[in-house]
Figure: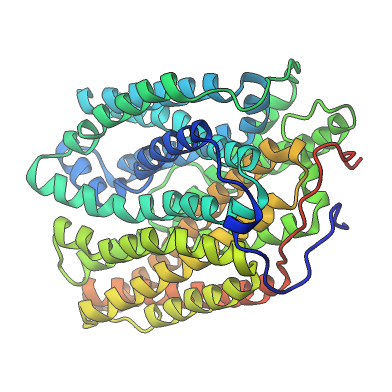
Length: 495
C-alpha cells in the first residue's frame, strides 16, 4: 500500500510556539478533563496484578476462576474498542463521554459493594465498557482540536495516561490492599470518577457535529465474535499453560478468525459508501501501518513485563504487596515526567531522533531482565524496570503522533479506534506470550526437582528472553517511521 500523504523530510521543524497560536482555553479544558478521566479509567487495567491473589483467597475461588476478573475485562475491551470509531462519529464527544464515565462509575461502585465473585465479575465488565470508550475519544479529540505543530506535546500527555496509569496500578493496589482491604481498591476511585463525570458533563463540549450514519447490523456481531474471539484466544493461551482448564484456545481462535475475516471484508465494501463500522482506509497510509506494527510490539513488551515483574517480586523475592507496588513507582514517575518532554522534542525534531534510542532502551531492559535468577537483587530488577519505562516513554509519543497524524482528518476517529484495538490485542498477546513461556518452563523445572523459587525464576527469565528477541523487531520497524506532512481535511478519501 502507498501513503496517501506526503512525508516531511528529515530535519528540524519550527518549535510549536513559533509555528502555531496557543490553543483556546475551552479546548484546553476539554482535553484536560478527558486526560484526567482517561487516566482514572485506565488505572484499573492493572490493579488486578497485585489484587488477584488476595481476591481469590477472600472470595474463596480457585485461580482458574479468579483469572476471569482480568480476562473478562480484557475481553470486553477487545469487543468494544473496534466500535468506537463509529460511536464517536455518531454520538459526538460530549454524549459519548457521558456514556463512558457513567458506565465506568457505575461499574466501580458496583465492584465496591459486590457481595461476591459473580457481582464483582459483572462490575468489571461494566467498568471495561466505559474504559474502552475513553482512550479513542481522547485521541480523536486531540487530533481534531490540536494543530499539527503542537500534537507532540499533547500526545506526550496521552503517553503518560496509557503508560503511567498501568505502571502505577500495582503500586496503588498494593498499598490499599495492605492497609484498607480489597474493596477500597475500587472504593477510592468512585468519588474521583464521579467528580470527573460531573465536570465533564459541564465543561466538555462537542468538537465536531455528529454524523447521522446508520449502523450496519451485520458488522456489530461480526466485530464482537472476531475481536472478542481473538482476545479470548490469546488470554486462553496463558490459562491453558497454567493448567487452568476451560475452553481450548483453538476454538475461540477459529471462531474469531473466521468472523474477523468476514468483518474486514465487509468493512472494505462498506467504506466505498462511507458506512464502515471500522474504516480500514486508515491503512492506506504506509506510515500509519508501520506505526501500528511498532506499537503492537512495544505494547506487548510493556504489558507482559507489567504482569511478570510483580509476580516475580512476590513469588521469588518474597516481597509483600506494598513493596511490590512501590517497586514499580519510580518507573511510573519517570514516564510521567518524560512524556511531555518527549512530545516537545517530537514537535521540534520529528520521530526519528526519539524512536531508535527508545526502542534500544526497551530492548536493553528486556535483555537485562533475561538475566534474572532466584538470587537477583532488587536493585537490578528496579534498574531494568526503570530503563524499560524510559524506553516506553520515548517510544509511545512519536509512534502515536506520527501514526495518527498520517491519516486524513475525516478518519481520525477510525484511526483512534484502530490504535486502541491494536493496543488491546497487543496487551493480551504480550500477557499470553510471557505467561505461557514462564509457565511451561517453570513447570518443567519443578518436575525436575527445582524449588518453587528457582522454577519460577527460570520461567520468568525464559519469558523475558523471548521478549528480548522479539524486541529486535521493534528496532528494525522504527527506522521506517517518518513525520508526515498534515493534509487538508477536504482531501478525497482513498477507495
